[in-house]
Image (tube, rainbow, N blue to C red; front, side, top):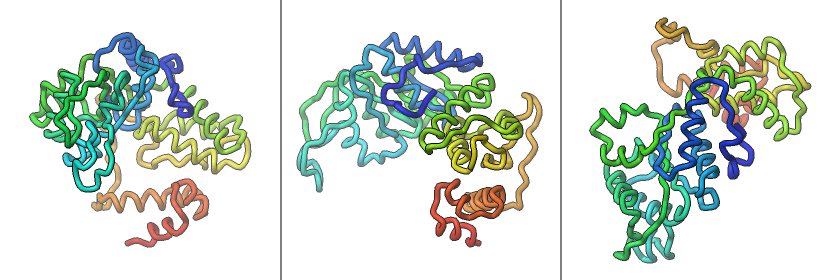
Length: 323
C-alpha cells in the first residue's frame, strides 16, 4: 500500500500474501461490487481509512465524492451542523448557509471513522439519515435528500457493538451490511518485506535520499519487531530512520523502535513477559521515558533526537527537564 497519491488509491494497488490480508482483500473487492454499507474493523494504524477510500475508488461510486469525518471528534452540539449543515442565522455566528457531510457526499461515499465512539444522540440522528436518506439542515424544516453509501470504521472488536448497551443495535445492523477486518501488521509477516521496501522508497523520495539497502542487524530488528502501532508506526519509524541515515545503507542504530516492544509477541498460549515498571504508569512518565530512550539511541545528540521525535529542540529540553 502507498501513502502518496491516496486520493486515487484503488484495490488494484493492494497485495496480500498472508491469509488474513488475503481474506480482507477478497471481502473488500466484493464490497466494491456492491452498494451495501460497510463496517471496517481493525486496530489503530492498520489503514482502515485508506481501505475505505480504495473500496470507494474501485466501486461504481468512484467518480463521486468521498467525504469522511471522525465521530469521536464531534460533540452533540456540533453534530447537526457538521453532518447535516445549517441555514444562515441558525445559531450565533452562522452567517452563511453551510452544507453538511451527508449533502457533500451525495452520489458518493460518507466514511464515518470511530463510529463506536459516537454519542447516543448522534447515533439516533445518523440512523434516520441512513435509513431514509433524508435529513434537515439546522435551522430549516425542509427535508433534504441525499444518495449516500455509508462506510464506517472502528478499532473496537465487533463484540463492542453486539454486547454493549451503549451502541444502538438497530444502527449496528444498518452499518454492517458487510464487515471487513483489517489484520494487524504482526499477522502480515509475508507482506512485511514489500511494505518495508515501499515505505523506504517513499521516505527516500520525500527526503531526497538514496537508500539502497539495509544492514543485516537493521533487517533483523525490523522483521522481529511486533509493530504495535501497525502501518502508522511503520511509516514513522522508516521516516525517522531515513532521516538519520547519512549514507545509502539504513543502519540499525537509526531504528527508533519501542524498547518494550522490540520482539514479536510470544506464540499463542504463552504469556507475554511483564514490562518493567517503577509503579508510575502515567502517560507523562511513559512519554518522558520514550524521549530519553530515543536520546540514548542517538548517542545523546539532542538535535537528531528532536528531529526523530518530530518536536523542537526547546520542547525536547522541556520534556527532559520535567520531573
